[in-house]
Length: 245
Image 1 (cartoon, rainbow, N blue to C red):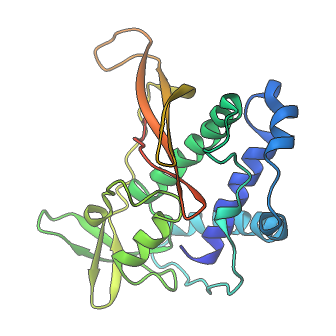
Image 2: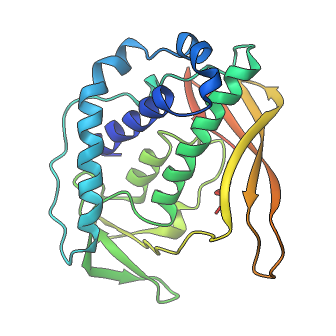
């Protein structure tokens, strides 16, 4: 992931930890989930990068996106202020999982439905089905492996991804499908409700997705799924996950 996007993701995590979530847990979580030194040092830069990333997103609608210069500063997304799965405080773990789940939804959406990079809509290639893939112009992103490296900064590679279906390579460049489908109009919210199990540094949580109805005209209902956080080389990542909308 180019450094601005990494910084933006770090900012999202820190902002979510500082100002979101269950207000009733605020006092206990704030003392247990303080940012590490590395996170504190990058807060200012990350916040600025988040604003830059938002501005860059709008450039996707132009026929030719302007290439961004790759920043040279090192930003660590691994310093996000969340509880480690080894802790025994279930309430704190569930609160952390809620925040991770919300960010996972945004990140998965950006990589698999949209595109987190600048693209040139005037240049495309097609796959065997005639689907159009648009040229990624963000500096330093020249292969599907580059995209996967970014994606797996946040998602564990223990679980398969679908990026090979959404990005293509040709002549040393990478192209993104960027299908841009709409979200499920019946989706309302998701709630991490409890811990299912712990296994080898991975914690599995129960998630309840609240839906207002469906295409058959039925009323509101809930669906239950499993979500996990996993520790890899002392880094917290999202493991088992399915986009709920």
